Length: 276
Image (tube, rainbow, N blue to C red; front, side, top):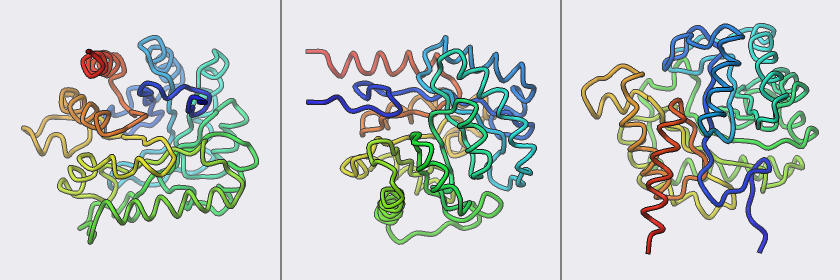
């Protein structure tokens, strides 16, 4: 039996996707890696800590975030993508703009991670299909500026599953192989706390779609709301709890800020779960 892979990486164990925000306004790290040299150093550190993928983003998609001009986004991310890809790292570009996708792919990115599931730009499908790179499709209700204003669902799991199935089908119709598509229910993107909890608890409902499931809940605000209102950098324990709950329910890729801590937690969880 052929081992399942994503972007050339074996899925026999959870993949850790480290986050590098080349932005001045991300919710979680407020510009820590905004300067190019800092972003490259942060990506290299994450690889050394065990990240299988490094996800580079140049536009914040936190609730209420303002859009960034494409030229500026490209200027932010391309030097970082190239520097990390040149080391042999598997680099993902986190963008919703086709021109940014193309520039990052040309610089060595092997994965496109799009919060709009390739609906945000009419050229995105063509760019990804022609390049033959891997793809992460995320669900978002609304736009970053408005998505947290009274998000509503009848059945949150069924509706998001139907949406992602439709987007996977659209990608296949454009020539993208299903084996190179990961799906992400979009924790915190147009969801209440209850929606987030239901999605994590029922994550295995996405497991039969034939695509690895990406879970991104690291440092998100619902963790603080379930706890004591901690600031983003103080949400690592809750992030680990959510990550392990996700792995137990079939998550194949964890998108995280705290790479070393997550790698350790997953290694121990996996060893315990596999012990005889």
